[in-house]
Length: 266
Image (tube, rainbow, N blue to C red; front, top):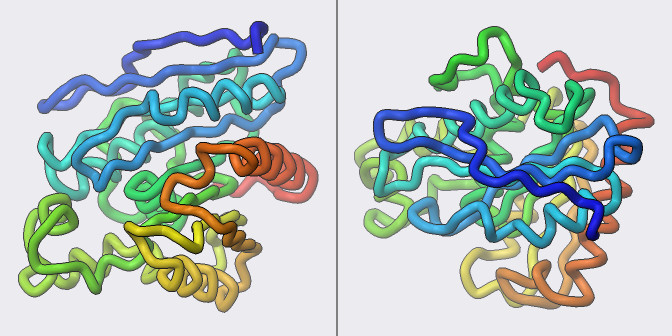
């Protein structure tokens, strides 16, 4: 991986609460594919940082795929939909700024846990409210693929208190429609991009049942989706053998998009 070029602390957005930064992981120019992957960290929407995905981003870049890890506003900074706007802005910045040196033909979102939720919601409803609050003109928010690790895809059953209520700005009993709007499973349409989902069978944080229900909703809409359920906990994909397997799966997924998927125009 010595040929991977890493550029840290690239500011891609200013907000009232704080500036947001990205880190890029780029293969040699001669080896770069025309798809860029954006990686969105988890942390129950109130903690975590983009360095969580550093090793995976470097591994993807070593296989020819430009990768970008990004910040978003946490619940302590601002409530929903601020974080969603930031992920949409990161997609638009990737297209506008072309951090890989050329405009990507494909953009794929990959997220874990709360990051998987934000990635899935962006994939499902890129052009719906709320619009991103950025300066990237007419760049589109739509993406060409989704990779989700153990995400919460239905917020409607959330507790009245706790991290989800903190993120959403209130309990579900008070703002039920906002919870519905923020639930990727409720936003699925046939236009949803292809998806690859993962969920460990021993996950102690989020239930496999929820990811299966999301997969079923995607299938019902005619979306190309696969779900893999290895034995492991909420972070199974960070360790061997699943780290290498999921990186290889991602490379394969991107290759299929490059061959089979038309530009979405979303």
